[in-house]
Amino acid sequence: MYLSTHFRTHNCGILNISNVGETVCLSGWVATLRDFGGLSFIDLRDRYGITQLSFNMENNVFLSEAARSYGREYVIQAKGKVVERSNKNPKIPTGEIEILVEELTLINASETPPFTIEDNTDGGEELRMKYRYLDIRRPLLSERLILRAKMIKAMREYLDERSFIEIETPNLIKSTPEGARDFLVPSRMQKGSFYALPQSPQIMKQLLMVAGMDRYYQVVKCFRDEDFRGDRQPEFTQLDCEMSYVSQNDVLNTFEGLTKHVYKKIMNVDLPDFQRLKYADAIKFYGSDKPDLRFDCKIVDLLSENVIKNSSFPLFLSAEENKQIISGINANGCAAYSRKQTDELVEFVKAPHRGLGGLIQIKFNEDGSVKSSADKFFNEDQLREIGLLFNATKGDLILIVVDREAKVRKALGDLRLEIAKKQNWLKKDSWSVLWIVDFPLFEKDEESGETIFVHHPFCAPHPEDLQYIDSEPLRCRAQQYDMVMNGWECLSGSIRIHERELQNKIFQKLGMDEKEIEERFGFMINAFRYGAPPHGGCAFGIDRWVALFANADAIRDVIAFPKNNGGRDIMMDAPSVVDSKQLKDLGIKFEF
Ligand code: ASP
Image 1 (cartoon, rainbow, N blue to C red):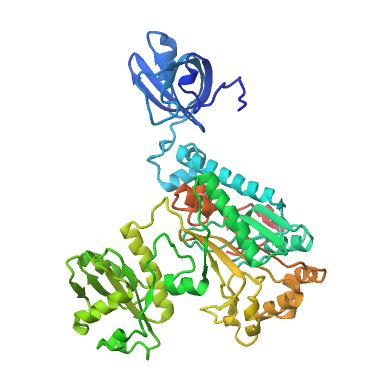
Image 2: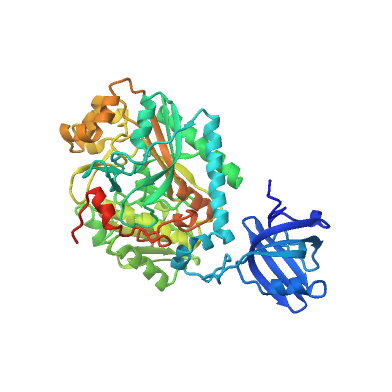
């Protein structure tokens, strides 16, 4: 690596025993200073690591005193000899050597930083966000940004080798619907008109296919003005891709290949071929369209089982009439849960957003006995028969719920994850990567009752289901797919509609009249008049994928300058008020 010799001959992470005897020059930040009277040491830090500088009063009083006067985060330059350390530190690559300093320059002083710049810092989240540039000096954070860059490089490598072309698309555009609210940018030249920031380059990349670019990708910022929900950022990064003349299979194979390439290159993991799980089965067996399959624990449906039908349990007997289902999971190895632990599970399914009435428990104890919270209604043989349906063995805990299907699946999906967390089944270094295919094309909006799209309005219907598009639109599946990594949706995509008439029809199904279609999507529909090729693609959520590899809890931990939970950049203090002149130029009047 080239380094300007004016400031340094090496970085702080590179010197080792093979450099002993060399005279070197390093620049960096004072990470720590240890003063033992006659001897003192500075740990000098830069992005690459830490090197110990050593000062000996006997050798050079002047230098030793200068070193002692420095504070944390001072920027200094040190010249000296590399020597073998007597007290080695096997934890760092430079731990066998130190620099006997002969020349020292203070380049820039620093105020005492508001938190310690170490992986185990004393700074709270908000404080670190405010001083993000200091936070990034912590190796934990800088390493994440480096990991991010390496991952993106590996993605580009794979795509470049396969004739994909990186093309930039504009940020000031007309709204692209991805189901969120747009960020709007007022136009000064045309007062009262607005650009939208792209929720994704979806329409642009489709138009690039019409334009004949054949294989496109872009590492791109997307903007969605959503209320804070879990792990979201108003701006985030996608690896956005599109291909012409492809079937769903072609797209899945291409991006399965990309994913395997990145796993191998970055984590040295050889992923097996990905399972392709139908959306309907994901919901049926795992209660989620992004199931974490690092562990199995499938939902078992019991309603039609004789042992249930023949029981005297009123809740079970009235289920069918009440349009309810009876289903459960086997929490392997949890029979020894205490009363307190099982009560917590009961509370978990009763939480308002899950809204179940309770949880029936059957314990298959290690001593061979069987105990149930509904003992009154079942004899032991019946309980064992139920156990067989779950393949229960000694030590297992069966958990059963009764309610409407959607509630049951959601609650059991959540419960299987909760148990996995408690039982430590979610191993950080094990990977479950799979495809979810055959999503529904439309769904009913719970609040308005209107038909809305599941992904976006450009997804092609499943060819077998085109026949239902007018009669039973909700029955229509889409040629849409997601990739799920350890329970996180990391990619979404679809084969697109490329015929004008069909696209028009879908817009109409979504409640748009001709005028609205023309206003919002006229340019796109028009492009489809000029020979649009069949095409499809996808977008990876880069932040999520990096967070997963970095073992970070939230995507903001892998973004250089993220927003906080309320969508604020607290370092820059944005959003902020602007002066009235700016507003006047834009023709905007505020009434508070
Ligand atoms: N534009 C889509 C999204 O942002 C991805 C795709 O369908 O390619 O989710």
